[in-house]
Structure formats: structure tokens, C-alpha cells
Length: 270
View 1 (tube, one colour):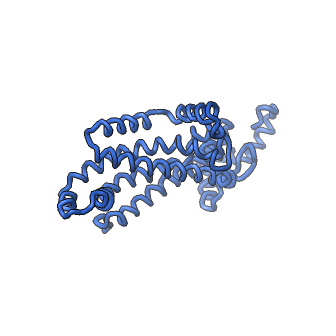
View 2: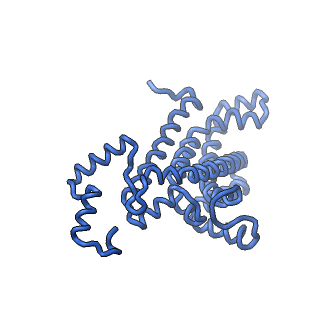
View 3: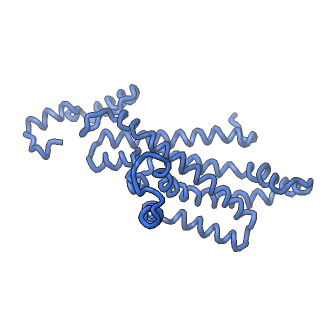
């Protein structure tokens, strides 16, 4: 903090005292936990603003992007997974699974750059970077959503293939139920458990901050804030963003565990 101004030894000692760095690590940790209980994550070393305030300023942008990406990912992934399962072993099944592997394997920064080149620089349909409005949200949401869709599609296919071979599916068909009803009400509902688990984990990760995507598209968000904090060596801000990301991830897992009971009544706690 003082290197550019060439701080004297006295000034450095004074600043260390102000930041509490002259105290034993155990005392610093207890003070940090005490602030955490009060919702105080400390202050940024460079802006002087409360860390929690800086995070809350960026949170709406990250939530907006995460929800948009999950809508794209879940919708596309489940549809492709069901189609692939119903056409198991055909060229369509193989094609969709190859696309899913490509979607999982392709780095998000590369996909983002390709989209910017195609839809912004070449076709001029969408703005390349920035914040605000639906048009600026589409490409980042698609980049993150395609990655989620690829994972959901593969998981949906494997779960649906397994469920479609169950005896109750054969019984439902034997009763003359409409195939669409059999697939949606009986097969998909029972295949949702692993899908919801993955969706919850993905959503928790997205809320923690899509670092690369927010950086590529120059969007506000917790992920980009974390990168800036690391570059600035703003340790309180780094701690705050990491802690918030962890809380989101754990909360998403908890919500998924609770949803299990409502999706499958056979699952319950004792």
C-alpha cells in the first residue's frame, strides 16, 4: 500500500498498527470471526469501502447472469438428453453426445471469443461487451449455459436410458398411456434426482462468480471483483469474495438435499 509513495519505517509501522497486523495471528483471526458474526468482512485496502458493500454492489449482476445461464442450460440440456435417450444407439444419439462432449471440453473463454467474433464483429447482431440490457446478457448467458447444457444433457440421457428400462415404464405403456405422458410423467420425474444434484452444484458455482466469462465480456460481477482483488493484493476483498462463493455453493447443496424429499417421497430423514 505504501510502496509507490516510498513509506518510511515509521509510516509502515503505523499502517500495520491501523490494520491490526502487529497483533498475533490468533488475535487477528478471532477479530475476523467477530466481525464475520456481525456481517463485517472488513474494508478494502485500496478503496477503503466495506467489503460486504462492494460484494453486494456486484451481486445482482452475477445473479442475473447465473439465472439466465441456468435457464439456457437446463432447458437445452434436458431436451437434448431426452431426445438422445429416446433415440439411443442411433446417429442422432451419437451426434448429440459428441456435441455434449465438445460443450464440456471447450474452454469458456474460447467460446466467448468465438461468439464475440461471430455475433458482434461479423454479424453485428449483439454488443460485444458491457453491462445492461438483454442484448448484453445473451452471449455471456449462452457461453455459460452451453457448458451447463452439455453436462445436463449427458446426465439426462444416462438417467433416462436407465429409467426407460424399468418395469413400471413397460407397465405404463402396456396400459395404453400416451408416449409423451410416459416419458414426462413417469420416466423424467424419476430421472430427475441426479439431474437436480448437478443443476444445484452448477448454480452454486455460477453464483460464486463466473470469473472467466465476466472478464471476457467485461461484465460486473463477483467473479470479476475477485480477480481484481487478487491483482490488487486486496486481501480482505479476496477473503470476502471467496467466503461468499463458498456460502452460495453450500446453500445450493442444502437446497438440493431438501428438494429430494419433494421430488421423491421415498427419500426422507429419520
